[in-house]
Length: 168
Image 1 (cartoon, rainbow, N blue to C red):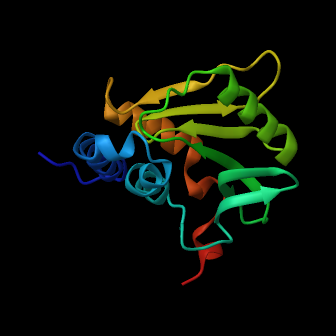
Image 2 (image 1 turned 135 degrees about the horizontal axis):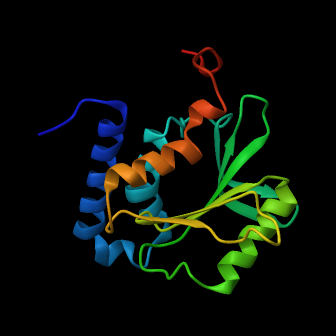
C-alpha cells in the first residue's frame, strides 16, 4: 500500500534510489559522477532543491583553492549546506574525508556539511571541536521513514527558501 503524504512521497524516492544502487552497483561503485546523477541528485531534488537553478544549487563550486561537489544556497545568496559526494563503493569513514569536511565548513563559514555515497548520508552540523560526530543515515538499514524524517529536518530547501522566493 502506498501512502500519499509528503514523507510518503519522499520515502518513494529513497526506495527508488535504493533499487538503483542495487541495479547499477558495478558502475556506481567506481564512478562518482554516475553516483551523483543516479543516487544523490534525486534525493537533493526531492528535498526541494532545484538543481537546474544555479542560485539554489551550484555544482563544483570553487572558492580559493577549494572545490565542493554541491553548494546549496539560501534565499540570501549565501551557502547554507555543502554536500561532498563519493562513488557508491567508497568507504566514507576515513580521516581524510572528515578533515576535508571540517575544512569546507571553516572556509565557507557554514555549519552544515554532508558526506554521501547516495546510500549512506553523514550529516554534520554545528561543527565544533566538541561536536564532530555526524548523524549517519543509511538507506539499507532501518526505517526509510526515519531516514526521510532526518533528511527533511536537516536538508529541506524550505528551511532556506519560501515558495515566493523560488519563482515560476
